[in-house]
Length: 294
Image (cartoon, rainbow, N blue to C red; front, side):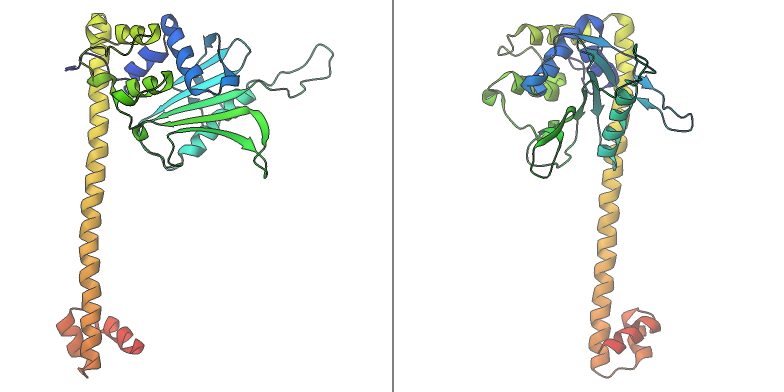
């Protein structure tokens, strides 16, 4: 099934292969240091369980795509979102509450209890759709006051609207550009481009080459790719159905409006309500309502 030389990073398998393996942790660190503000630089990471249970059994649990912690105890959630969700922002806010709550401790050596001091929490969302937050595709969201001053610097949301990145190969000017370009186009490459000379990118092309995977991983990827393509087809079908339905409803609405205009003209010419209804196709009640507006 897999016809591309390199795996698709937007599949579950591809995303975990690229960012979620201990042997490739340096790739995730490089990516985070590329998209995070300079003051939030990461030197080391520890992978943590991606399933988080709520404090109350009746509440919904959270399953992250990737969850890790740096050497300072700061928490990082990395999410791949393939399609728009109505409450996508709400979801990212909700997810941020789990690494916040898990920092609570039952007590301190002095017996005075936990003092609510928190480590920073970051939620990074790779979005394979346009969210229209602004014309930019890279968004760093923080808590600020009414004077646009940072109120709290230990909670940040980073959103990357990948389809908004339109730079061509010749326009790539820095490490950040190359990262976004490779995420958007990895599956389409037939060879590793010559301009990707950095060690981290050479490693990406090495580990994501389909033939470099063992047979078990190839089978897992092909199954995952099939699920991914079926998912995209379902989305395309839903969009096309919505367009067709909207077009049909628009035509119906246009015909209805024209019937109202015709009925109004006939009433103004003195035609009886019953005949106007017959000729226009409207109900007698609808024609009476039109007559009351003349």
